[in-house]
Length: 163
Image 1 (tube, helix red, strand yellow):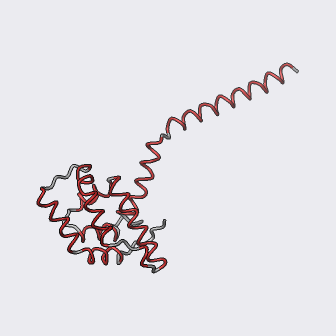
Image 2 (spheres, rainbow, N blue to C red):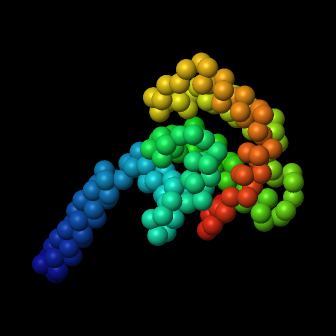
């Protein structure tokens, strides 16, 4: 009887040690930062590249609306501030395409406010310097071409994007 109890306790102890080692390994391997990075990469992959590795229409639209090179656009899209704005805009396109309701479209004022309120922060965060004259030129272009910008945004094929 003692031998049976000893074997059962030994098996339980061995099993608990194995489970403890597995738990510690997983808890150390999966950190909050790694989860956030994974989510960010997955989301950005959908914004920058499609399933086949080609540039998405979202990415190409940003290139069309700006005079920036591809590397700078990738930096901007990897920026958290810009990514949050882009996610909101793509959600707006999604909702508009789904319902056809104008209430989901950004207004001219909203587009201008987004540019004015975020240009310095995003450019600073990606370490991209522009002159005050270029900054004002971007803002003036946005103000003078808002209808074209909005029209281009809402004609963008967002493909397989889902909220």
